[in-house]
Amino acid sequence: MQIELDDRARAWRDAARRFALEELIPWEVEAELNEGRLPPEVRAKHKKRAIELGLSAMDVPAAYGGRAARIVDQVAAWEQLGMVTNALCWCFSEPHAWMFEACTPGQLEKYVLPLMTGKRKECYAITESESGSNVEIRTTAARSGGGYRLNGEKWYVTSANHADYLIVQGRLTEGPHAGSDSLFFVEKDRPGIELVRTPLFSHTFSDHHPVYRFNDVVVPEDQRLGPEGDGMRFSHAWFRRERLMIAARCCGAAARLIEEGTAFARERRIGDGVLADQQMIQAMLADSVTELWAARLITYEAAMAHDRGEDLKSLHARCSVAKLYASEAANRIADRVVQIFGGRGYMREFAAERFYRELRVDRIWEGTSEIQRLIIARALLKRGLDGM
Image (tube, rainbow, N blue to C red; front, side, top):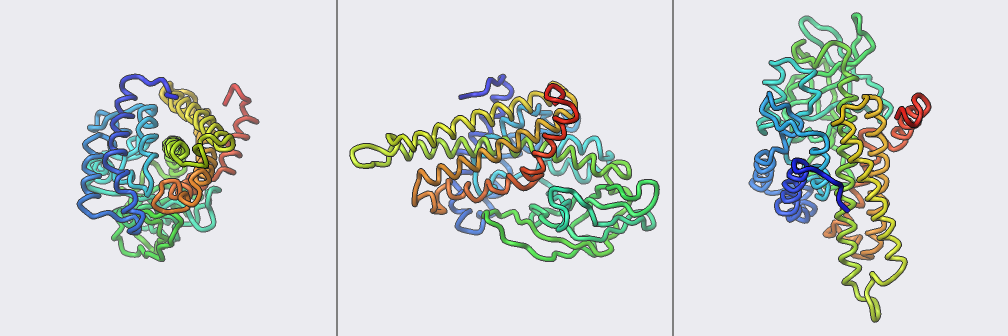
């Protein structure tokens, strides 16, 4: 059940798979039982290895020392990394192609390229308590001298506890672009940044999702990304890619779940036979395989459409289809595999239990399933099936 890939994509897939199986997965249980944390030397080793493999440079143009990987290459890699629980595959930062459009040479040198080498770590401060999937930015960016003054509160600032700077989205309050959004690089130690709280979540990750408040945080103008008012355009580019990579990771998680559930069903003795002989178990596995195959076809076709340079609006819809289907399918597969494992499926030392908790958020972040349905439906109504 393999997607037909060329040598380049297979090389990315195989390298990521070895990294996941040999370096990351063996540490999952320790992470689970220690609030997501691993020994510092282990985390440093994982980060170093990811950088050596080029995973931190996949989306970076060759002119800047990156690997200039195609989207299909990146999907092939992230599918394999999706087999890993506890967000252990988040051990590296990854600059995105849109940054090289948005940023000045000075910003690239200071903020973006150091992500590729592991010298810096970013986090995104976009979501607010009143926004969620329906983006509503209330954090203000008011002109102040030679820059801006940020005021507001951001929720779910993922990986902020490991980061040294934030990318903050703020609403401009005056000038020709008043009411539109801009993105800003903000050093985490900037005066006026307040850590409000760090909520606990269902998953056990070392990367936290805290709430931050910005109290008259002064940001120089040269730390704004792109022209004034272009923040939402760059956010959309980030969402589009991340939705596709979420779909890829969900495919990897689903594949591991099916493989582990099948192996258990073959070995688990039931009377004179094994669990895999039971037709209801076979039906669960058959449904799971069918959904995984469909999710992979949708996801890889969306990736290949990017590499073919198809219409941006079409790509936006394709990414929503991929995220919607793959994330919901992976959740159904996780539920079935927990059921196949029985009581073992409810034990935290089993990957099925961890995926059951961890995959749930993939139906929420970077746009809920409901938002993806709206995007898909609107694309259909505006452009028809062929136009999608």
